[in-house]
Length: 280
Image (cartoon, rainbow, N blue to C red):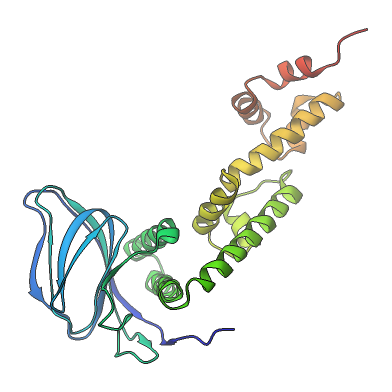
């Protein structure tokens, strides 16, 4: 069991989304933030940065860290545009570091998480959409999402590779639990959110690592189980197609018919005929 290095969680000031074309491009002259830290995530494109006197190049899926009080300058390349998210926060305290520092200032201010890129982007998009929604408690929800992002970054920066191996094991276990839940409930209406709740994670995270493990999304996996069950019932029973549709989780026989034909390339009736044993 690890002792957390996070002593106080961050307060989110804002999250912004920027897109700059190649011309005129992006340029922010030398400046600093006296009471907050900014974390950038590059969605696409490239840029150059000078942070605390050190030069960096950053590209798609890199994080760029402007820690409190450190002078920095940023500009995009003239040959291409850039798209990125910018998160501003304060009140973060990690053990042994100055306030609002995620990294020792001697460590590189540009980094990435190759095995968690999709998760990070999905999390940041959710945070941005939540803050932009103006819905009740949106600030609180976005702040909790920021806390999760910071915790995952700390896990990557301070505890890898052991943490990565443990997280992969946890993901594999979650996938098995989700598969079991789907197998036990495929004959009922199922949503991605309901499947995710059964394994205590968010729909976006589950979709990512479920597809990574199985090659298909949780909903696609559900459809496959339903089609396999329907094929078995069509072969072994004389039940009407409408009844089979209900038994495998579809309230609409028309929807079932169309989906079966799309997945199996035959209508239920055609499949039943083709699968029937030859007459003797």
